Image (cartoon, rainbow, N blue to C red; front, side, top):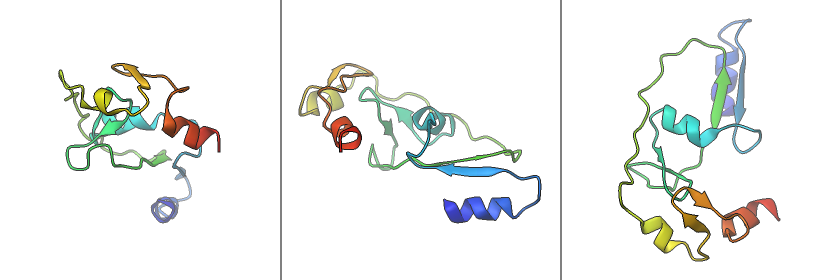
Length: 111
C-alpha cells in the first residue's frame, strides 16, 4: 500500500494520497462494501465471496478523480452461521457485537 501511495504521489505535484490500515479513524468496512469488495455481515465483518471474512482491509485516500466500482450487495439472508459460531456469544443480535464479550476486541484494544 505504501508503494502504491508513493506511486500515486509521483503522478503530479497536486496529487494527495495517504494510506491507512488500522491506523486512523477510517470507515473501512463501509468503504469496502461501497468499493464492491464484499458486504458487511451480521457479525460486523466484511465478507467476500472468495475469502469469506479472512481479509485485511487497508485504504488509500486520494484526491485523484477515479471511476468507482459497483457497490456490493448484502448476501446474508436468513443465515446465522456467524452468530451461532461465535465462541463467546458476543454477537447478541444480527449486526450487534457486545465488545465486552468479544475476543477480537480485547485482543486489539486491551493489549
